[in-house]
Length: 363
Image 1 (cartoon, rainbow, N blue to C red):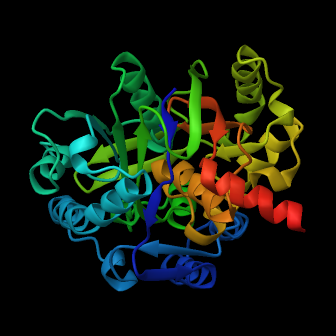
Image 2 (cartoon, rainbow, N blue to C red):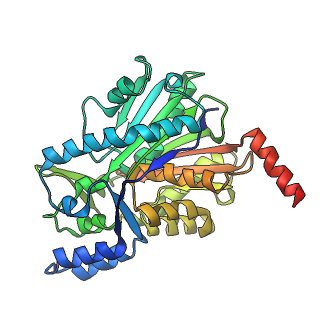
Image 3 (tube, rainbow, N blue to C red):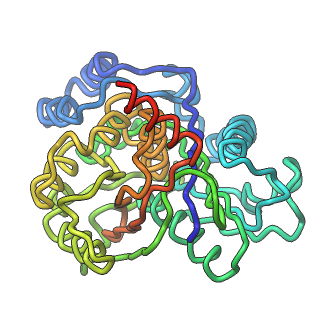
């Protein structure tokens, strides 16, 4: 079975704290009739800080969609190569070992995709397949992993690279004062991430089963209005309640593997906001601490769209991983309303597993 290895993640150097976000909202929208509501919603996100590709003064000054998109391309080419190289090292692979690149981004547009630039500049084979995914938003993190799994399963011996590049700050719209947009200004952050799905071997989540589900008649709940000024984020107030219909879907996927979703060993969940994690914990009957990695991503980086699940998975590795054979689930949620999910067992490095056992026996 294909193995989801250790991701590499990077965030920009410009930091925006919650205190600064609230001060900006009060200063820029002091006359807004719903300012108290917006401030309360932003405060309740649980985000302590976020990282953005350009300084805040530059971000607040909208230079037009053309320049914004040019910045997106410049920043992507500057920041993505390092995380790609680190992800390859984590998986003990080289560019020549990769047979497909899946590129995830909903915050800028390039044609050809950045995949073509990566192949030309980082040493990938000309035969490398390309799969850019641009319109699944936050759900693309799970979808990218699932499409890599599909490819590796259909082509035995093949390896795939998944790259997420999300510069949400480049979608800031100073003239858009809808509540959903004001909330997004205090929730989303920027990040780039990459991970390898190996045909076999390595350490990580051995993918066994995947699934996708769309909640009927919710396609307008998370969306972009594409205007002359770029992408305008639109959020329906009903979105936080979507875990009630999605929790049974996650349960069903786990049960197809013969598992109880309430009793797994690790969880990698997209942290769209604290309500998502709180509700899913309740509906799956899982202790809140089981979602600590997803919550840490939200707290330290904000909602980094398709990169959230990769960063949450990275934190599991940083914590020391999971005992060999541990069962887990990964899920991304986004526009549609769409859920992209996968389940699998943890595959530990045999040498590291022996070291851990020896330490435990000595203790």
